[in-house]
Image 1 (cartoon, rainbow, N blue to C red):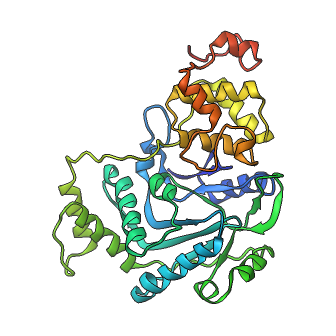
Image 2: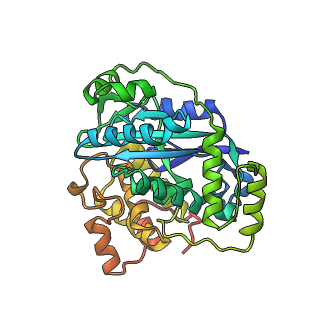
Image 3: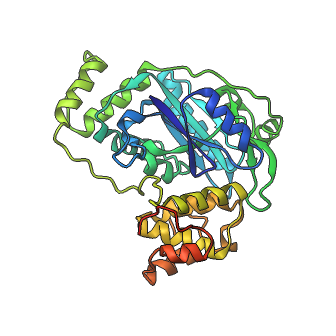
Length: 358
């Protein structure tokens, strides 16, 4: 069965139905920034340890995340530029959202899912976004969105934006706007309208042209010849044949992974729920994640889910999602191991009967 992941922003639930997703939104909206995965995934293709296989993503859209913490107007300029130079000439109508924070999200939807081989999907999305960013000079297109590719999380439309400083709603909602609104209205007007929480959603306009362009780009990646007379189905079959024995490399940050010990998982989830964590608990979480093989980006993701406050106040993450906080750097420099079971018991995190492995 296919599911979406829900996060705040750390991934805390799988949602198999719209009702399950709405239940999570109702629980956290107004208290936490709410996210969902850009793509749906097939639980029949989960990894052996039960973790999500992100390469099972159903590729039915291309997602863009435009961010600029200092000047959101630059994001609007990039979105408009891409619409003028790419979308309009091709007759493509994107879905566009003001996130409520520092930028915009955009989707270009395919007429039907593109069934690429699993080992090709991640790099295909990465390379396509890299190409579009360079070709159309999209300075604010977020590199993290490119790196995370099929495992990206996006803000959920019509949910409140929670401020970093006081962890309270800012009064601005993640809001969908029409292409006409984006092209004509200034940034102040868009933000003013995003404070009204209209609950507006605009149905996607699915594009065969967008789908074909992406498939042809993947063909070019693997030097597969193609002509305008080739059907999309034919080209996908050619990609399958050409990439059957190819090992795709990737330099992205690792996917979101959970530590193995259930007691530490519970600690993380409880602290996300509370929005607070003690210094000792942070050390437990951080050493667990470092030992489990988390990247700096992964660890920042977890601590950002706990603290909706400026990064520098604690040192557990930074404003740069790919850079470790000073506390994490110290743990890596000292090569500190995760807490033993005895120490977890002393800290009140674990019990004797806990089956956590050593």
